[in-house]
Amino acid sequence: MQDDKLKGKLKMAIRPPAVAGQFYGASAAECLEEIRQCLPSEPLSVQLPSPVVGAIVPHAGWIFSGHVAALAFEAIRQTNPAVDTFVIFGAAHRYFGSVPAVYDRGAWQTPLGLIPVDEILAADILDLGGCSDRDAHRDEHSIEVQVPFIQYLFPKAKIVPIIVPVTGFDVRFGTRIGDLLVQLKDKRVVCMASTDLTHYGPRYGFCPEGVGPAALQWASEVNDMRFIDLAVRMEADKIVSEAMQKGNACGPAAAAALIAAVSAMGRTRGVLLAHTTSNEVLWERFHQSSDEAVGYAAIVY
Image 1 (tube, helix red, strand yellow):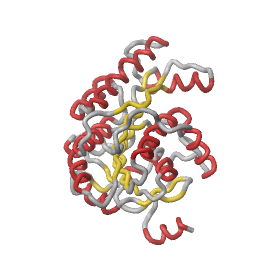
Image 2: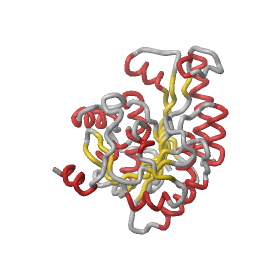
Image 3: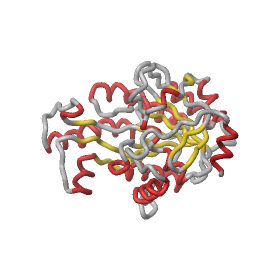
């Protein structure tokens, strides 16, 4: 009934889920059960920024990276439980434009129902250098897999989805958004960036250290950590070039925009909550191993 009212109010097309049933559960029941399994059973004991105003999260299938992303969402809930809007910077897997693509109107649908776009904030962000392009989001999963967590933990929140391409990226876009959010006195906003880390192995065409356990250890402990260290130190101006040279992030522009935004909001350092790889998860859950791996990390600001 509530979704029917929202549909009537919006009077426009709604983005349907593109990867439900693939990256996460297709039904509401499946989705809720997976979220509850991903979330930590106890409050986080690490010292968190107060409040958390930004986070970097992974976007693989929940079975592999959902528990990592859930740590960031739990950190937000613990320190900032009444969020009005999430600005979500996503990786550009299928969008080849040179300007950040903002989904500026309507709503997104997941198995948990509809979540509205914050159209007022989206319009302000368009004035800062984004473009209105809802079609760019049609098949992109990097933002979608975060949305059910928001719906579950922050049921009154809205979203502003933004795909941030590497081509033409200007770190000042993130800074301008941060400056805008600082000026908002009647709205509580959290920024998020969605990126996975090193995609290592023959299937990804990236094997600079060969194949085998030692190579995967290098990908995690050396290559991933180069990116993580820059993100924790909040060196937004180095993130994109680092990833382009070292192949250690698929959404570096999203991460750089996030870091620039939270820097403008007064943060000076990130907190690493978790770092793992798909191969480590594969072993822990199924006692299987692979010659390939993708890195995942959760960092909050």
